[in-house]
Image (cartoon, rainbow, N blue to C red; front, side, top):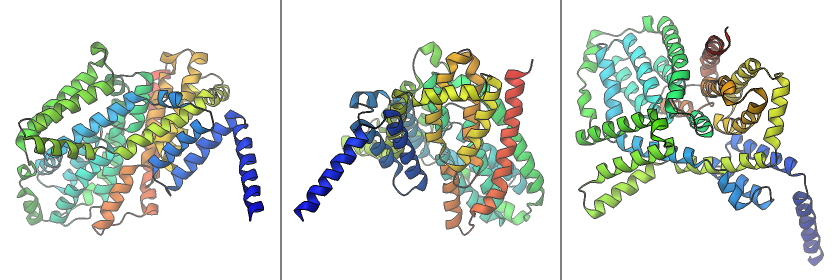
Length: 456
C-alpha cells in the first residue's frame, strides 16, 4: 500500500513538472480550449469555469495575481453592474409592462398591429436593457394579450426573440459584445448609434415586413376578443408613480451622459455606476434605516453576479493568451490570410462571427477576438482604418444570436416561458426560421458595410 502511495506521488510530481515546463503558449492555449469546451457543454456554472481557468493561468505561472487583475476590464464590469442596478430599480415601477400594453391598445388590439408593435417595443427596449430582461418583461404581456385575443402566440414569440437580438446591437449598452468592444476601444455611445443603429433599423424593418407578410395578414380574432384587450387598464401596470418618474429622470440623465462622455472626459462605466448610485439614493430616500438597508440589499441581489464573475475570469484567461503572444500570432495569421485587405477582413469577421455565435456563446468568442483584431491594426493602417472590422465583429456576434435556439440567453428564456405556457418551441422548428433570419440580417449588414466603407 505504501509503495502504491509513493508511486502515485511520484507520478503526480512528474506530471506537475511536465505541466510547469510546457511551452507557455501551448499551455495557455490548452487552458483556454478546455475552459471553452466545458463552457459549451454547460455541465458547470460558467462563472465557476471561468474563475478556475483564470486560477490555473496563475498557478501555472502564465499570469501573476497582479497581471490577472490587470487583465480585467473594470470599465466593462462597472458598466454592467451600473446598468443592472438601474434596470432592476426601474423595473419595479412597471414601466416596461405599461409600454407593452399601451402599444397594443394603440393599434386597437389588432393582432396584425400588435405583432408589429411588440416587435418594435422589444427592439427598442433591447437597445437600452439586456436582452434577457427585455424578454422577461415583454413575453408575459404577450401571453396575456394573445390569450385574450385567442390567437397563437408562436409568431409573436419568435419575432420578439429576433427583435431582442437585433435591437440590442444598436447601442453600446444593448448587448454584452458591444460593451466589450466599446470598452476595449474606448468607443462612445454615439459611435455605436451612428454606425450600427441605421443597419439595425433597416434589418428590423425588413424582418417586420417579412413576418407581416407571412403571419400578420392571417392573424384574425373577433371584435369581442379585441374588446377584452381594450378593457385592460395599462395604468394598473404602474406600481409606483414616484419611482417611475425617478427612474425615467435618472435613465435619461445616464443616456445623455453616455452621449456626452467624450466632452465629460468620463468612461461609460463611471457614468453607469454614478447613475446607479443616484437612483439608489432616490429610491431609498427618507426611508427608515432598516427599510433602507433592506431595499439596498434587495437591489444588489438583482445584479447578475454570475455574469460579473464570469467576465472577470474570462478577461484573465484571455489576458493569459495575450501575455504569451498567442493572440498576436493569430492576428498575424489573420492579416496574412486576408492579405492585409481591410475589406476582406471585414467580411470574413462578419460571417465567421455570425456562424460561430450561432453555435456557441458570443461573449467568450468576442473577448478572444478583440485582442486578435487589435494586433492587426498596426499592420493595416491603424485603428481608424480597422473600424469596419470592429463593426463587423459586433454585427456578426449579435446577429448570430438569432442563428439557433441556444445561440443567445434570451432565446432560451423565451423557450422556457413558452414551454411553461403550453406552447413549446422546438429546436428544429425554430431553426427553420432562425437560420434564414440570421442569413438575411448578415447579407443586409454586408451590403451596408460595403456601401458605408468600401464603395468609392
